[in-house]
Structures are given as structure tokens and as C-alpha cells.
Length: 299
Image 1 (spheres, rainbow, N blue to C red):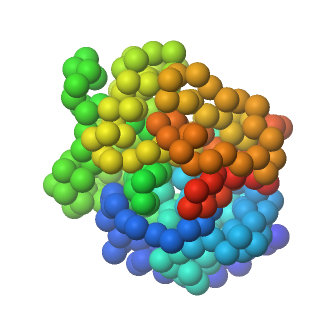
Image 2: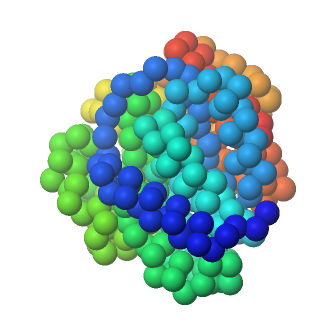
């Protein structure tokens, strides 16, 4: 599938214009079902399958958890399809920022060269406007959606949990700016980079990911849920076999069947990871949230 350079740039500008009007974080109500896709990483087949599933269930919202490019070789095509979705369906589409929405990352994982070869220097000059206008997270009904997860301000203070509405009411003007593009706010950095670990209670440094990045434990995510009045956290970021669930007691479920359903209240207090790319040769997953159930669907 070849993307026309002019069409891509036009769609990119339209997308930026829409995203500029959206806050960095918001809490909204929505009808069900909600369709969620994790890291796509340049695999267009995953996106095409997700679109069909979302249409089949008549999804009211399509939530993208970030990491649209790098690793796979069709990042330009993936972005163009996402741009078209946002332009055509606007309020039905939620685009969030992952840690790979960064030219610094793209230079190491392939998208920099792909964008330069397919679109040219103009694409490189403009793509940062897209990255820097993507929201970092959203709460829909009682579910917190983010790429990485729960952040901390003083990570040694176990009771220091963040109320996102209070935190972001003073930070909306950072969106679209260089400091947001470069993840200079530590809370935003963690929301894009942190990983859950149910074997710990609070926060511990994640040296594998880098400076300023943490693992968040079961007490941390439960306290965060209480502070922000949510019952579930759904995120991407980790390379799992389609899906992974850290339950509220710190146990986990890693073997989830295609089309397996759970009653929503069975999962309350849990952190769910969904990974939607096949670059790791494993399964690609998506999630459908209904009013009372959560369904795990392979792409």
C-alpha cells in the first residue's frame, strides 16, 4: 500500500488542527462499547483488523494507546489510516501519546528513515507538531487509559498519589510545546514509560527503561484508582502475548483466549496490558469494553 505524499501531509495538518483543540488529559462519559488497541508499531494488518472489529461491534469510541510507528515497516501507512479515522469520525477517535511518539526514539527504531524516504524532509519537520499535540491520557467512564501507567511525584512517599484533574489543570498549556515533546515533565514522562509489577507494593526504579522511569506496584495503582475514581487501568507499552492482566491482589493472568470475556467487576482494581503489533512474532490483541463485560480479541 503506497501513501501519496501530498495526501499524507494534508491529513497530517488536519489531524494536528483537531488535536490542538483537545486537552492533554480529560475525563469524559461515553456510551458503550469501547474498542481499544495497543502498540501498533507499524503493522498495518493489526490496524485493519481492529477497524473491522470496531465496526462489527458498533463501537462508540476507538481508543489508541500510542506507539503507532517504529519497528514495523508501514508506520507511514498506519499513521495515514489513523489520520483518516480522526478526520472522518473525530469525537469517536481517541489518540494517546506513547513513548515512541518522539523523533529521538524514531531515529533508533526505524521510523525516522521510513518517514524521510516515503514523505521527505517536510514530513520530519511537521511530525513533531503531531507528537506534541497528542493527549497523554484519558479517563472514560470508570477506566483510565494511558500508554505506560501510574506516575509518582515523590516516589519515596507512598501516600503521595496524583489526582490527575488537579495536576493537569495547571499543565494544559504545555501541550504543543517543546517541554512536552521532550517529556521534560516527570509525571508525563512516567505516564508514557512506567510499567506495572504486582510483586511490589509501591514504586521502584526501572533501570531497564532509564532514568526517571518506575515500576508501580499493587498498592500504588489501587491508591491511584481511588484518588482518580476509576476501576480499571488499560495500557500498552509492554511486549506481551496479546494481553496481560495484573489483578488487584498482585496475581496475574497471562494466558487469555481469543474472544474470552470477563465480567467487568471481576477485573476491578486490575491493570490490563494490551499489545497490538506482531513484530515480536506473538499475538496481537485488542479489547472491547461493554457495559458489564470486557472481551479480549486477537487481531
